[in-house]
Length: 294
Image (cartoon, rainbow, N blue to C red; front, side, top):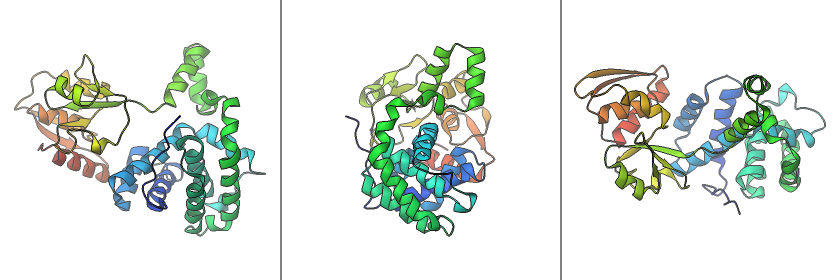
């Protein structure tokens, strides 16, 4: 049985409001996802557990957007009008929780209505949001097995390009992989084998630790002590190709969230980190402070 997502507080309104703000920035303002999430979480000032809940909602909504929209459309007589503002996004977030995160239906529905009530446009559609969310809670999951998830969740341009370059079997395999939460890749300052055992992770040939088990990142051994940081295995390779860099000056462009900056600094380089987004640079500073790196 899939574990039920832990809701951070009695209503989860703060986390869900931050998720809505982030996804509005993506869809309405066309901001990059990482930038939108960082800005939303920075403004919301949530506890770590609440922030993790926000990220889970947003990421699941985007990974499963095609399926979510199909289910929502089944319970709507016609698409929501532009004048409804974020009403559609509120429904998408609620559907992600109900269909894929296994959050208690009453909490999801009540929070969706509360979010709608806070927006001067969406509040006129809160009755509709309530009704559709309740139907998704009651009937939505039963619809999923019959859906072509890979096709629905993949943008047409990507699907067509993959079909041209690969077979349909490979195209579906790529699409399916995109819907799965990726493993956690970790870079350590030292003693990779020791930390692999402590973190229940696999030590890759490149030195990255790959952890597939779940759990809050902040609760894992060594996080609070600054022994390691999150960094995709592929992203860790470029800095390794530089060879010995102790005492050398390296400029890290597009530095946020700071994985390569930390990697370079841990190797003894003098690093100049640069990023266009001010909010994302705050994250670099926070990460380096936790790691005791300058």
